[in-house]
Image 1 (cartoon, helix red, strand yellow):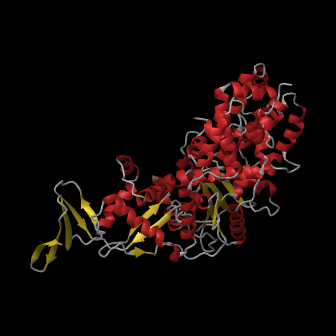
Image 2 (cartoon, helix red, strand yellow):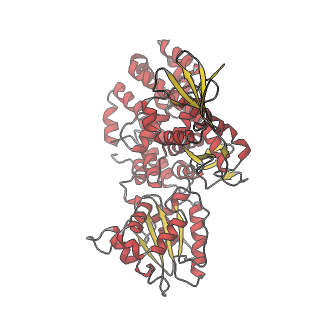
Image 3 (cartoon, helix red, strand yellow):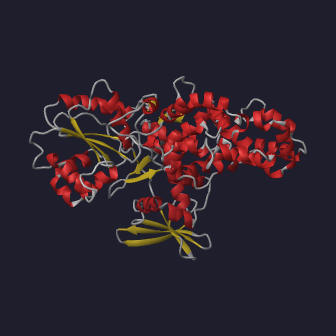
Length: 574
């Protein structure tokens, strides 16, 4: 036997697979099986129904990023939807169609959208669906051709299609333009319990779940069941590992962390490719596995390296997503229980009892607990060390415990903000105020430092930090938030100018937490957080320096320079 049925089936998840390409002309059984209903699909259907019954021609913009599912959803509606919602629409996909290979994307759009130009917009014509990436849409309306489509540009801008603003989207009866943007729909939801991606969990269920019609499960049962190498194959054990619901939830949570922490925009195509990469080792073949089994030591090293927990956290350069997720490696966070286990594990000359205790009820134990494997582990320090790392990772995944309290706090505050719970946001405003004072320095009397460059004295001012709450969303009492801002937004009043606002993503939030704990910022922080520096400068401009400046001399003397109607007055503060 030289072909692995399970690997062949999993290969359909890869970006390089022909199954990753969607066409409106066909929607095979595999795509039907993999289809997952999403909120964006429901909203798209709702608006399409209204457009079909409308009395004016409409251009429907289906916006998003490459690989996010625009082509998939159109293909699904074309081939599987009993309502035939796409009937009567001309469909153009900017990623796959061009009137001429010599024309650029914007030149093609200028021709395709001619009927929706300003001069022809009110003329009769057919409805159109334009599947378009946001970058291409921006380039088009800002190009020289955009002058013919000013009403389209006005629609795009007034509906914040190219921004991160969360805007309710619905059918507009009097408008020639309608839209749904994948960018408006997060891959995860927020609730008081935290962040969760049911969509990613459903994808995992499709691949590793127990549905009888699953082509993956069928390949696992029939292909692996007949394979002579089944009890030595890491892919088989990885699939079994991923069949556990708690593991699938942990993997989904790791991807949510990638979205939140690194502001990574994940597409369905990238997610599917990632699931292949954490199940099937790079360059895996049946023959390569068979050849490695001639030597127990080399076979063990290869097997341990190819276990899913290690594929997740040890691989370098396989994909950008892989590099991001591995930053959550539980080995990066030490704790007392882990240290105690390490001592017990490494001092044992015979760790067979530890291995049996930890692997007897786990799928990988079928291979690892073989007598020749245990003997090899006891004799080879490298394999023993790698197996320890694996156990730590398995424990973290089985308990969905990645020990990142800052992330948990951020998700909690993100939910409170988006739910519009104003009375619970005081701690965030207080944390920002304290962080500004730690960043700038204070004189011990809650005055903010203006200048530290003079060795003989430092200048300080009083800043009110008067909160502006207008940036907080309206209260939302839904148990689970489906559409929301992925960042916090807070503001402070300014007497003589516009309010001062600060967008807080996870990386800035982490810095704020460190500053609140007494951290002294570095040049790297200043380089990475120019947005915070700009905010600090604007906050300092809201202070009272025009009327009163406090001075702290090198000998510790406090004084003040006051502005009066007769000039400036200097006084020493006792």
